[in-house]
Amino acid sequence: MFSLIFLIVFPFALWKAWKNIEMAKASAAWPRVSGTIIAAESAKVMFRKQPRVTFSYSVNGAPFTSQRISFAAGYPPRETDAILSRYPVGKEVLVAYAPDNPAEAGLETGSNRQVTAQMRILLICFALIVFLNVLNFYLSRLNKRTRPPIRTYGAAEIADRKWQT
Image (cartoon, rainbow, N blue to C red):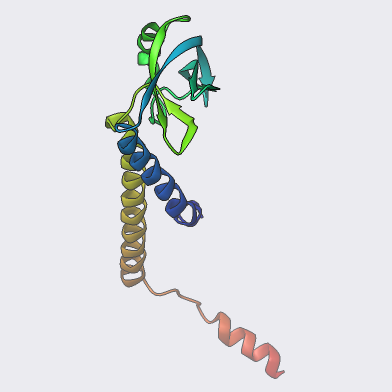
């Protein structure tokens, strides 16, 4: 059952991860403006400590705020303090924004190992589920060939006699 649910959700998750990687690659060429860190704290996200940095910036006079540090889906909890120390409240930073949608912005651009981690995890899970299903199929076939025949000890004959009388 878990395999079926995963295989239904897998294409959508893979597509989302791929789009995130593509956006991360494109962000390296985005224009940059000056911004200010307005909040920096650690937050518990899905049972993990994650950095949450809020920054403000303006594009063509229009003010924006965002919380995207990078395009990574998450950070190892041991790196949270290091990330927060890079972005203390009040610090002036360069903010990269999407030219077609200035509300889409980030502090760290480009693709790295953390950005592609989601794709790697999905592909490893997919390969593992396929392997386990093939192994299960093979073992069930092998079990059918080596299982001794089921003995009824005449139960079918006794049932036939009851109906005949």
